[in-house]
Image 1: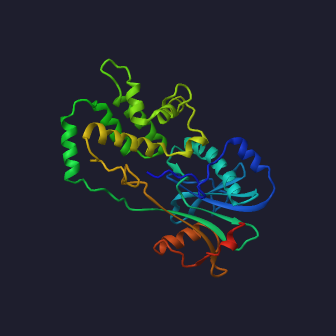
Image 2: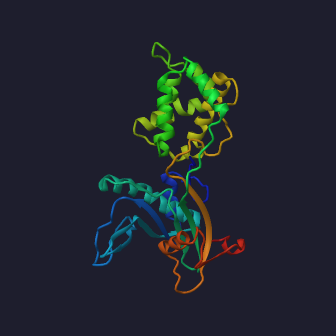
Image 3: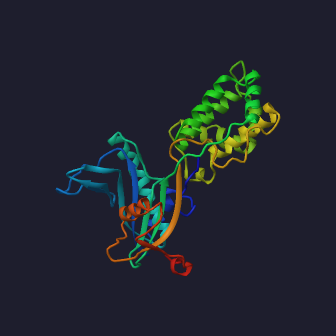
Length: 327
């Protein structure tokens, strides 16, 4: 699983940072974001369009017509944002969606996800735009070889690992969603260090994770586990590290060294916990229409890429760093 932050690899700051940025004067940007959802936006404003606006963000059905109805299994969210630069504009816009989309999800009672979806940002005074293209990709599995079979025999004969650990770990691998995976992995870790009398072997947990990671996750009241299970969710600083991958590698290293006696489970696997679903490829481009008929609109650009093997045919790529440097 890959943890996506934002298009620039930057951390989305605190709410105070959002407010400070929002009050700055600067360039005008128009931002469009695709939202994947099973909900149909049926807030009809006239006979042809369905949309609504809240907090200066307009939510539209991806595509609609009277013959076929609501199409695309998606919406777009769009907004005009004033900011000093494209990074700040993105932070302002994303902070609004982060607050609004979960509320829409509650009311709509439907799947709704935008953080791993394409978006486009256009500065008002430019004739080109930044396009963050994210699309579904086929899953890529891993080989289970003779070496892994030997490791399985060892685990089958080993009685020191509680069965609950394997069940939670299996749930974690099969689960989609960062927070969901973390919660399953936290339970797996507790099962792994649980003694016969029900107490936890915290020294073993330090041995597995290291003191720093163990404290980050399990520190009373402020640890990530406590906050996720007591309604505090994760803070912006928690996105600095991919805790799913960190925990995964620590547990695999423990099993290789202490249980299996060799590197049976490979630790250099890219994106471990591979899955059938939610596999994504990402491309980041500055693009310009080839003709006046080819509009810089998210749906038009996205459909051009999708129809042509993930390449633009109606838009030129801009590779000149000097042209895009102050965007």
